[in-house]
Amino acid sequence: MALAKIMRNGIYITVITIATLLISIPAKAQKEEHHKDLGNKYYEKGNYKRAISEYKNAIAIKVNYDVAYYNIGLAFNQLDEYDSAVTYFNRSLELNPDRIKTYLQRGEAYLYLGNYRACLPDLNRFISESEDSLSLSQAYELMGYSHELSDNYEIGYTAFDNSLNFRPNDTHLLYHRGLCANQIKKYEHAFDDLTKVVSERPEYENGLVQLGYTLIRLRRFDTAIDTLNRAINLNQKNALAYYYRGYAKWFLGLYKEADADKEQANQLGLKSKLWPKPD
Image: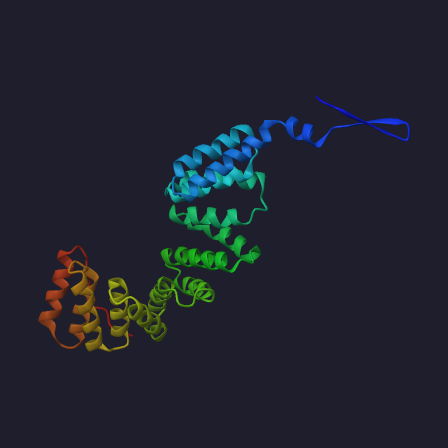
């Protein structure tokens, strides 16, 4: 190693020059960052498999590189390989339990695996500690899906409501809040949400179907039939649209037409039951 000696007050002091220091730094530290940065470039281009390969190269150099484990988890999420994503998020949290966004991403992976019991604690942990409004909106949205898919519609409604505080015009969130509102019999709230959805997205057939159901519950049968006709015109294989249209016709006393719609729903694979009574 090259050394430089400086005479100060008659005493030799040995120092390492800056240039020599930069040259002598082990290449190891630079290489791990190099592979991580390469992985980030591939990730941003959507080449997630190459990104994972580079992140693993970084880990081969630095075994406890928590950022690389986290990034691999992100890439596996993008590839819909959620079991693998959870594995790498777990390792990242073992190394750095304070990286709060890891809980959000692992919660998302658990959601898509259908593991709602594991999903919710991660999302709650993230919500309790994060101050990023966009990420908080995402966390509440994922929480809403988890509760909706678990048939916990009341809590799902609240979660989507919280998400909408950050993104008030998001039609996707409005749709799911409206769907939950239907399930907990808040039909006026559902009507408001779903009307906004189909106003912004007039060809969104699922929105039209849910709105049709809401109108039936509000005993606005003619308007419900018109709305469900729009859904059927968009997709003549939408079994639920036929079923709800038949439901509306049945309450109007159009029994033959109602039975024809129910039969069509059955042929399309919907196992329809007796017509329920509106509230």
